[in-house]
Image 1 (cartoon, rainbow, N blue to C red):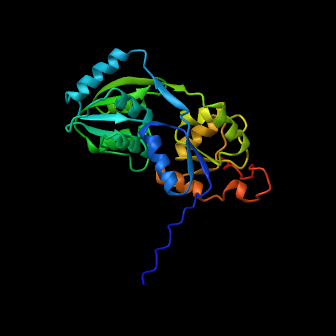
Image 2 (cartoon, rainbow, N blue to C red; image 1 turned 30 degrees about the horizontal axis):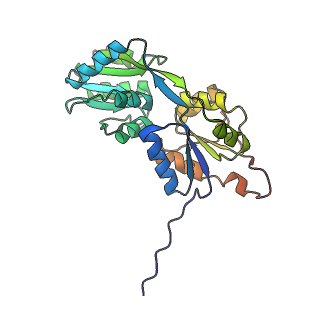
Length: 275
């Protein structure tokens, strides 16, 4: 007689985790959290608004579709949202470079391929260094960035002799959460908050001024953690791998806050990482 296989462990059973982005990426993260036993709470904290020069962006995307570029670079998942909203076409002849696994995952979630993610330094400077090493001959590059981002990637590629077209793709704007989500965070009913970018960190700090000490604040990588601290947000843990799986695993290191004492309010005490 066959013995039924034991159910897979669900390390986040009972957890309520705030997912700070919506769309296909948010849905994929929510599915991954459910697989680990958690209840995801999708509450988009940021969105994009058109850049001041939408005509320039639209022209660049037409040129992209026509195969005018050897590479297109994306430094945030919000840029992916812009591409998806414009139904942008990336031809097979144009390779795609993404800074960070969050951006790469966002590209995959909406059906775009990814040809390059920096191996070590997941920053604009790290991407520039890797692209320059891969492409010693001059190439045509489209760099898409936010209105506030410094054109570090563009400058480094131009200095290396490449033909770069830098286009502002969007402005980041905050999205107010519902009163219910704000109340759930304040009361500790939300056990963990995922922080995937500096812009998200700023909104977490602004929209949730009273976060219980026991709420786990998980940053997807060192750069995001640094941006979060600069924004005034405490960080409980940094993912060892800058992926959705790594971020979820980082949260799973902690015991469920209100499980420490079922008679205590859900405001357990976990020290924030210092530094």
